[in-house]
Figure 1 (cartoon, rainbow, N blue to C red):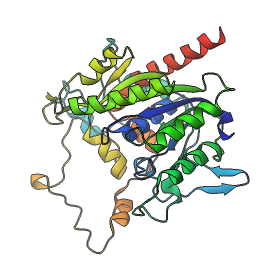
Figure 2: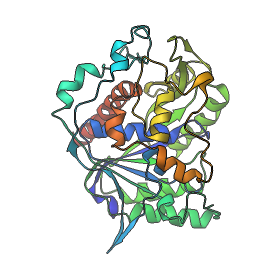
Figure 3: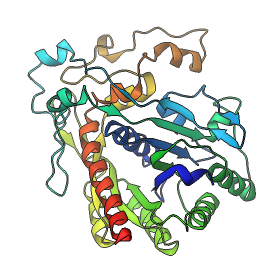
Figure 4: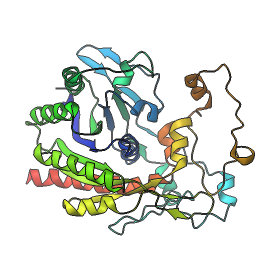
Amino acid sequence: MSLDSVKHIVLVLSGKGGVGKSSITTQLALSLSLAGHSVGILDIDLTGPSIPRLLGLEDAKITQAPGGWLPVEVHPSQILPPIPTPASAESTSDAKNSDFNGTPTGELTNGATASPIEAEKVDENEKRIGSLHAISLAFLLPSRSSAVVWRGPKKTAMVRQFLTDVLWPPLDYLLIDTPPGTSDEHISLAETLLKNTQTHPNQLSGAVIVTTPQAVAISDVKKEVNFCKKTNIKVLGVVENMSGYVCECCGERSNLFGKGGGEVMAQEFSVTFLGGVPVDSRWGALVEEGVRPVYGDVANNGEDGEDVEGDGEGVSGGEKDKERREDGLLVDKYRSCALRGLFEVITRQLVEIVEAQGNRAIR
């Protein structure tokens, strides 16, 4: 079985589409890698794979090897260079009270506070990060616009093939990004994992449930928690995505989609609330254009916020994206993202929960 080299398997689930599962999966993977863990991402959202786009690997292709597929390497294990400090961020004092001033201080429900990036620069400069690999159906498609029009049996077969035919390197964590709902992919995933991990106690660590604060999302996500109970998959915790928006100009926080729904749901099902993740436009710019996040100033995109990059006439969307994307590793630039501090706390809790399960199994 190709999962023999994987220590812990964590599913990322949600009963509702558009809540940001792939974004949460990507940031969990980056945060775990920065903590020194070797990580893999398996994208089984067959009809709408987003992981390659978020990782900036849309042109990557899977390599066929004897015995299976080799996952795409996002970055190897290495020591990263020091985090650059933009002069504009140092000289700006108006945004010091903002949650997004480059030194994240997001508070979670357990009273923990995300560690400032600046306080860890010295230690990080000497710390080796873990490797990151990924696999997705998008790596097998001829182009990013190719549609996947498959019936249930073919989806089921593809999920099983991903779980058995990928030659993963030794991994501490394999994160599985799933489509919304409880459809064929979920049933096939649960059945195959539960069957293939019987000889590896606690290899299937459990699931992280992603929701947004709205009542309509909470209602659908509750079904996913019940799905986990019926399939004997442990719920490791709940993450509330899009939990507010912090204005980059004035630092005022607005709860665009309500507040606290994910925490209430976690309490209702007696599971851990891992934290709330606000909207950060600089994270969007990072994954879309590869731009290192800078806080404490307002980006100058021309008068009245108009784009001054040109109209892109005669250039396709894919080629324009390539031209705009900045060089450098995603994991390196993510260290400057305000959300990084929040995910440091979230992943620390997640690792503690997973390791506690393993310790109980040993006893």
